[in-house]
Image (cartoon, rainbow, N blue to C red; front, side, top):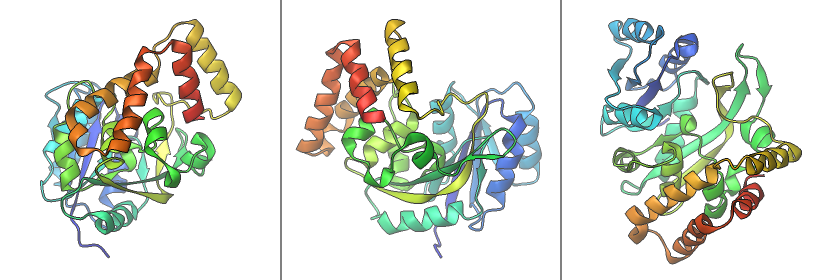
Length: 292
């Protein structure tokens, strides 16, 4: 059993409906978290009342996000964590398996060399608003991919590192805290680090219940025909696609960490960045090919 200490960094925003279930699942982990740090992004529902109740019992510490938005909220939570601990990111509306921290910390300790940024991430069991199972595997049944085989080139198009499943070491935490403005999503950024000059390990089993509800923005459909229809509709409506945001983020990444990546990685990223000057249809065809 690992002796690593773990901080949980939880970001909240108007999450009162499911927050207590998630907090209870974190508190009752087999590997007890050293601390539960919560950053709230100016909630207007009962979220703050719930957080104050748990804080008054000494179960959590919560802070107000000095910025705005999900990335700033997570950065604030992480910045208030103990600098010597592993950090596990948490959303507000999931339910963790009792051994999530134990399994993740044990796996992370196996790849943590003491200086390289390192993360572990896992599969998810998908549930609906009523905590009823809809998919036994997020990756196998929804995404249709196995992150064990993930390569940098496919990661650029479709990130498989889901933030709420991750745990990372001190070196990755340091990189997390200096994440620049303009990044499309925090988990995409740490995935780029982990798959280039860092370390990563995928735990091929669900370690949590990932709640899909009306406030989720991730599309649950995995059918090829659905994706073709969506790409065609978005093209006709001239919608900006997620690939554009990924390209901008990879461009930022190369500017910041270009000296730390290999020549082969640099060529892969430069080819990806050059898609920025391609036509929308070429971008969509590439995006569809690598995310199907």
